[in-house]
Image 1 (cartoon, chains in turn orange, red):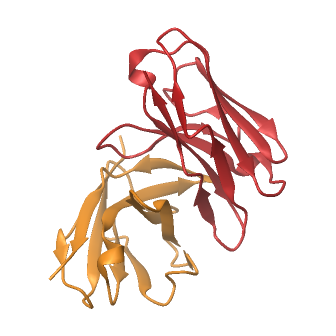
Image 2 (cartoon, rainbow over the protein chains, first blue to last red):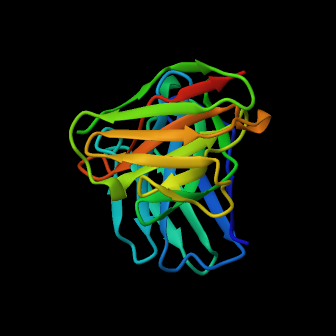
Length: 116
Length: 108
């Protein structure tokens, strides 16, 4: 059974870079579209971007200048980097598998707080 | 950018009743691109319905999706206590590849 698990710091200082990793277990991420999303009480669910195991990426235009996604097929991991964070980037961050046009598998979520 | 508007914001029903949740797109969309999710407190969303009307694996048949064009509906035929949660519709496509509605809270 394929499972996704986010990991990374729960606290990031303003202006620094938020980095999270999603580890996939129970199956290979080859041929996946791996997505990152975040959720806040105020803005709801927001798509950040996705990356294909072949390296193709697609980012939310509103975050594109600050976001970078990468993938390491040897470790079955994909990663999110969000630069120059502010308090408005405080959210629960999710990784998920995009299968077709929907997100069929999700990680449990990782709360990241931006604060000094 | 296509905006998804869900209604009602909150729906108060009792176990055994029928729930009808609406998702309206700001323009006509392909049914294949419309999905529904359930989210319970402190949990990740769970895929219920994809391609507007196809149940995801393991989803009970009391959940059904329908609609076309700009109007889509999630119906729960007979509510069980575990169904009380927040429901989101999601659209794929366009400049913003994945968008969500603001959610409908289904409460007892």
